[in-house]
Length: 63
Image (cartoon, rainbow, N blue to C red; front, side, top):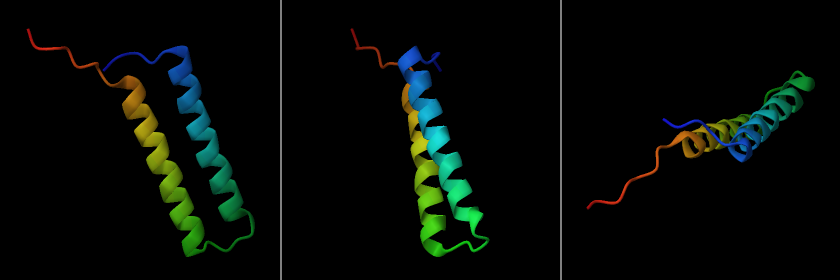
C-alpha cells in the first residue's frame, strides 16, 4: 500500500464529502427512500474505489 499523492488525497476527500452531502440530503426529510439508498451505495462505492486506486501499489514489470 502506497501513500497517496496530494492529488490522491484531494480525490479521496472529494469522494468523502460527496458521500457526506448525499447522506445529509437523504436523512434531512426523515424519509429514507430506495433511490436515496442507491445513491448512498453508489457514493460509498466511489469512495472505496478512489481509496483503492490512490493507495494501490504499482505493478512492476517482469524482467
